[in-house]
Length: 80
Image (cartoon, rainbow, N blue to C red; front, side, top):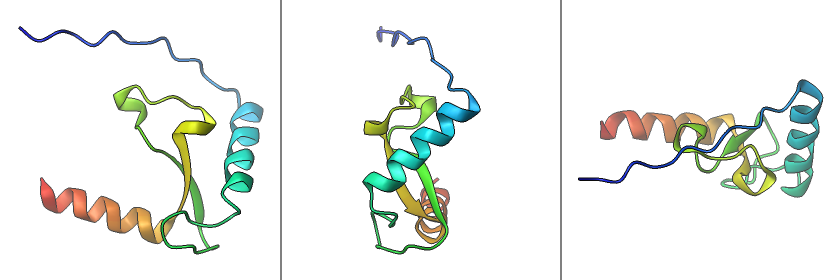
């Protein structure tokens, strides 16, 4: 029998908190995609997804560009 993973309560950020955290991550990452170095079309993404209990915390967030995200999503869809 497999053990059930205990879920942690989520602490939701308000809009201001979300915006501040996003700006902190972008600044930390030098306003560049951490995969390809592009400064265009940047987004902040979870390293460990929220669905897998990833936190909305600076240590679990990374700056990626939309091109890298599209390639990553396409490769995951092909693998299914």
